[in-house]
Amino acid sequence: GAVVSQHPSWVICKSGTSVKIECRSLDFQATTMFWYRQFPKQSLMLMATSNEGSKATYEQGVEKDKFLINHASLTLSTLTVTSAHPEDSSFYICSAWTGGSNQPQHFGDGTRLSIL
Amino acid sequence: AQSVTQPDIHITVSEGASLELRCNYSYGATPYLFWYVQSPGQGLQLLLKYFSGDTLVQGIKGFEAEFKRSQSSFNLRKPSVHWSDAAEYFCVRTSGTYKYIFGTGTRLKVLA
Image 1 (tube, rainbow over the protein chains, first blue to last red):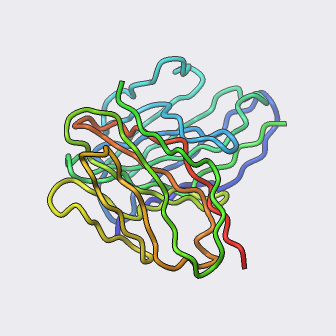
Image 2 (tube, rainbow over the protein chains, first blue to last red):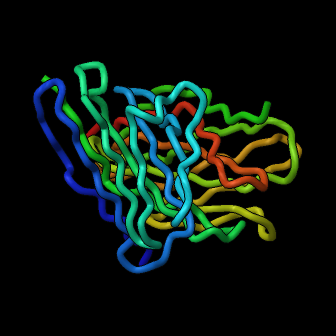
Protein backbone atom coordinates (compact mmCIF):
# COMPACT_ATOMS: atom_id res chain seq x y z
CA GLY A 1 0.00 0.00 0.00
CA ALA A 2 0.81 3.72 0.03
CA VAL A 3 2.12 3.92 -3.51
CA VAL A 4 2.98 7.26 -5.07
CA SER A 5 3.50 7.44 -8.81
CA GLN A 6 5.51 10.27 -10.32
CA HIS A 7 5.65 10.92 -14.04
CA PRO A 8 7.73 11.38 -16.08
CA SER A 9 10.79 9.81 -14.52
CA TRP A 10 13.13 11.63 -16.87
CA VAL A 11 12.68 14.57 -19.19
CA ILE A 12 15.01 16.55 -21.40
CA CYS A 13 13.83 19.76 -22.99
CA LYS A 14 15.05 22.95 -24.54
CA SER A 15 15.56 26.14 -22.58
CA GLY A 16 12.44 28.30 -22.50
CA THR A 17 9.92 25.48 -22.59
CA SER A 18 7.58 24.51 -19.77
CA VAL A 19 7.56 21.08 -18.20
CA LYS A 20 4.80 19.45 -16.18
CA ILE A 21 5.44 16.75 -13.60
CA GLU A 22 2.61 14.68 -12.17
CA CYS A 23 2.37 13.12 -8.75
CA ARG A 24 -0.38 10.63 -8.01
CA SER A 25 -1.27 8.69 -4.89
CA LEU A 26 -2.50 5.39 -6.28
CA ASP A 27 -4.11 3.65 -3.34
CA PHE A 28 -4.84 6.36 -0.81
CA GLN A 29 -6.12 9.91 -0.66
CA ALA A 30 -3.55 12.56 0.07
CA THR A 31 -4.68 15.62 1.95
CA THR A 32 -1.31 17.18 1.33
CA MET A 33 1.39 16.74 -1.25
CA PHE A 34 4.91 18.08 -1.03
CA TRP A 35 7.39 18.97 -3.74
CA TYR A 36 11.10 18.67 -3.09
CA ARG A 37 14.21 19.43 -5.07
CA GLN A 38 17.39 17.46 -4.63
CA PHE A 39 20.81 18.52 -5.83
CA PRO A 40 23.49 15.88 -6.45
CA LYS A 41 24.74 14.24 -3.28
CA GLN A 42 22.58 16.47 -1.11
CA SER A 43 19.50 16.10 0.99
CA LEU A 44 16.02 17.08 -0.09
CA MET A 45 14.94 20.70 -0.06
CA LEU A 46 11.25 21.41 0.40
CA MET A 47 9.95 23.68 -2.34
CA ALA A 48 6.26 23.85 -1.61
CA THR A 49 3.30 22.27 0.12
CA SER A 50 0.01 21.80 -1.64
CA ASN A 51 -3.40 20.99 -0.23
CA GLU A 52 -6.27 19.82 -2.37
CA GLY A 53 -8.38 22.70 -3.56
CA SER A 54 -6.23 25.50 -2.18
CA LYS A 55 -3.19 27.49 -3.21
CA ALA A 56 0.21 26.01 -2.60
CA THR A 57 2.48 27.34 0.13
CA TYR A 58 5.98 28.02 -1.11
CA GLU A 59 9.15 27.97 0.93
CA GLN A 60 11.26 31.07 1.17
CA GLY A 61 13.33 31.64 -1.93
CA VAL A 62 11.19 29.50 -4.24
CA GLU A 63 9.66 31.45 -7.12
CA LYS A 64 5.97 30.64 -7.24
CA ASP A 65 5.65 32.01 -10.78
CA LYS A 66 8.45 29.73 -11.91
CA PHE A 67 7.18 26.60 -10.16
CA LEU A 68 3.42 26.37 -10.57
CA ILE A 69 1.67 23.82 -8.40
CA ASN A 70 -1.87 22.56 -8.84
CA HIS A 71 -3.53 20.08 -6.50
CA ALA A 72 -6.70 19.31 -8.37
CA SER A 73 -7.82 16.27 -6.43
CA LEU A 74 -6.97 14.16 -3.39
CA THR A 75 -4.86 11.91 -5.60
CA LEU A 76 -3.16 14.28 -8.03
CA SER A 77 -0.76 17.20 -7.77
CA THR A 78 1.23 18.71 -10.62
CA LEU A 79 4.36 20.82 -10.71
CA THR A 80 4.95 22.91 -13.80
CA VAL A 81 8.36 24.42 -14.32
CA THR A 82 7.67 27.43 -16.52
CA SER A 83 10.16 28.85 -19.01
CA ALA A 84 12.74 26.39 -17.81
CA HIS A 85 16.43 27.25 -17.94
CA PRO A 86 19.55 25.14 -17.37
CA GLU A 87 19.74 26.19 -13.74
CA ASP A 88 16.36 24.52 -13.19
CA SER A 89 17.91 21.16 -14.05
CA SER A 90 17.59 18.96 -11.00
CA PHE A 91 15.93 15.95 -9.45
CA TYR A 92 12.39 16.72 -8.32
CA ILE A 93 10.58 14.46 -5.86
CA CYS A 94 7.01 14.58 -4.67
CA SER A 95 5.51 13.05 -1.57
CA ALA A 96 1.97 12.47 -0.40
CA TRP A 97 0.56 12.59 3.10
CA THR A 98 -2.83 11.54 4.43
CA GLY A 99 -2.76 14.24 7.09
CA GLY A 100 -2.63 12.09 10.21
CA SER A 101 -0.12 13.34 12.77
CA ASN A 102 1.36 9.87 13.11
CA GLN A 103 1.47 9.12 9.41
CA PRO A 104 4.62 9.32 7.28
CA GLN A 105 5.03 10.94 3.93
CA HIS A 106 5.18 8.56 0.99
CA PHE A 107 7.53 9.49 -1.83
CA GLY A 108 7.41 9.14 -5.57
CA ASP A 109 10.41 7.90 -7.54
CA GLY A 110 11.42 11.36 -8.65
CA THR A 111 11.82 13.15 -11.96
CA ARG A 112 15.19 13.92 -13.47
CA LEU A 113 14.83 17.22 -15.34
CA SER A 114 17.54 18.28 -17.77
CA ILE A 115 17.27 21.61 -19.55
CA LEU A 116 19.51 22.09 -22.56
CA ALA B 1 16.06 25.47 15.54
CA GLN B 2 15.20 21.84 15.44
CA SER B 3 17.64 19.77 13.46
CA VAL B 4 18.81 16.29 12.60
CA THR B 5 22.46 15.31 12.47
CA GLN B 6 23.89 12.33 10.66
CA PRO B 7 27.57 12.45 11.61
CA ASP B 8 28.74 9.97 8.99
CA ILE B 9 28.61 11.15 5.39
CA HIS B 10 30.02 7.88 4.07
CA ILE B 11 30.18 4.42 5.56
CA THR B 12 31.72 1.34 4.00
CA VAL B 13 31.06 -2.15 5.31
CA SER B 14 31.70 -5.64 4.01
CA GLU B 15 28.79 -7.78 2.95
CA GLY B 16 27.59 -9.83 5.90
CA ALA B 17 28.95 -7.40 8.47
CA SER B 18 26.75 -5.55 10.91
CA LEU B 19 25.73 -1.95 10.33
CA GLU B 20 24.90 1.02 12.50
CA LEU B 21 24.01 4.42 11.07
CA ARG B 22 23.94 7.25 13.55
CA CYS B 23 21.29 9.92 13.90
CA ASN B 24 20.98 12.63 16.52
CA TYR B 25 18.12 15.07 16.82
CA SER B 26 18.07 18.42 18.51
CA TYR B 27 16.14 18.98 21.70
CA GLY B 28 12.47 19.72 21.32
CA ALA B 29 9.07 18.25 21.84
CA THR B 30 8.84 14.48 21.56
CA PRO B 31 9.85 13.93 17.98
CA TYR B 32 8.38 11.70 15.38
CA LEU B 33 11.34 9.97 13.75
CA PHE B 34 11.79 8.13 10.50
CA TRP B 35 14.47 6.41 8.50
CA TYR B 36 14.22 6.42 4.72
CA VAL B 37 16.45 4.81 2.10
CA GLN B 38 17.13 6.20 -1.36
CA SER B 39 18.68 4.14 -4.13
CA PRO B 40 20.44 6.06 -6.92
CA GLY B 41 17.99 7.91 -9.12
CA GLN B 42 15.03 6.83 -7.04
CA GLY B 43 12.66 8.31 -4.53
CA LEU B 44 12.68 7.61 -0.81
CA GLN B 45 11.39 4.41 0.73
CA LEU B 46 10.26 4.32 4.34
CA LEU B 47 12.25 1.81 6.42
CA LEU B 48 10.68 2.45 9.81
CA LYS B 49 9.11 5.06 12.03
CA TYR B 50 8.90 5.94 15.71
CA PHE B 51 6.10 7.88 17.31
CA SER B 52 5.85 6.55 20.86
CA GLY B 53 5.88 3.36 22.86
CA ASP B 54 8.48 0.66 22.45
CA THR B 55 11.82 2.34 21.82
CA LEU B 56 13.11 -0.48 19.64
CA VAL B 57 11.40 -0.28 16.28
CA GLN B 58 11.44 -2.98 13.64
CA GLY B 59 11.31 -2.04 10.00
CA ILE B 60 11.45 -3.55 6.57
CA LYS B 61 14.43 -5.30 4.97
CA GLY B 62 15.73 -6.47 8.36
CA PHE B 63 16.41 -2.99 9.72
CA GLU B 64 15.71 -1.81 13.24
CA ALA B 65 16.24 1.44 15.11
CA GLU B 66 16.40 2.35 18.77
CA PHE B 67 15.12 5.61 20.20
CA LYS B 68 17.23 6.85 23.10
CA ARG B 69 15.86 10.01 24.63
CA SER B 70 18.82 10.45 26.98
CA GLN B 71 21.18 10.55 24.03
CA SER B 72 18.81 12.27 21.58
CA SER B 73 19.58 9.48 19.16
CA PHE B 74 17.74 7.22 16.77
CA ASN B 75 20.37 4.93 15.28
CA LEU B 76 19.59 2.49 12.51
CA ARG B 77 20.98 -1.02 12.68
CA LYS B 78 21.12 -4.18 10.63
CA PRO B 79 22.84 -7.35 11.79
CA SER B 80 24.03 -8.52 8.38
CA VAL B 81 24.33 -6.20 5.40
CA HIS B 82 23.53 -7.32 1.86
CA TRP B 83 25.05 -5.81 -1.28
CA SER B 84 21.59 -4.50 -2.21
CA ASP B 85 21.61 -2.30 0.90
CA ALA B 86 24.07 0.08 -0.75
CA ALA B 87 22.18 3.37 -0.92
CA GLU B 88 21.70 6.75 0.75
CA TYR B 89 20.00 6.72 4.14
CA PHE B 90 18.13 9.69 5.58
CA CYS B 91 17.08 10.22 9.16
CA VAL B 92 14.04 12.48 9.39
CA ARG B 93 12.07 14.11 12.17
CA THR B 94 8.90 16.05 12.62
CA SER B 95 7.67 17.69 15.78
CA GLY B 96 3.99 18.11 15.48
CA THR B 97 4.09 20.00 12.22
CA TYR B 98 3.81 18.40 8.85
CA LYS B 99 7.21 19.49 7.62
CA TYR B 100 10.04 17.03 7.52
CA ILE B 101 13.45 17.96 8.85
CA PHE B 102 16.03 15.89 7.01
CA GLY B 103 19.46 14.83 8.06
CA THR B 104 22.22 15.30 5.51
CA GLY B 105 22.21 11.61 4.68
CA THR B 106 24.69 8.77 4.98
CA ARG B 107 25.90 7.02 1.86
CA LEU B 108 26.45 3.32 2.44
CA LYS B 109 28.87 1.34 0.35
CA VAL B 110 28.95 -2.44 0.62
CA LEU B 111 32.07 -4.38 -0.28
CA ALA B 112 31.68 -7.84 -1.77
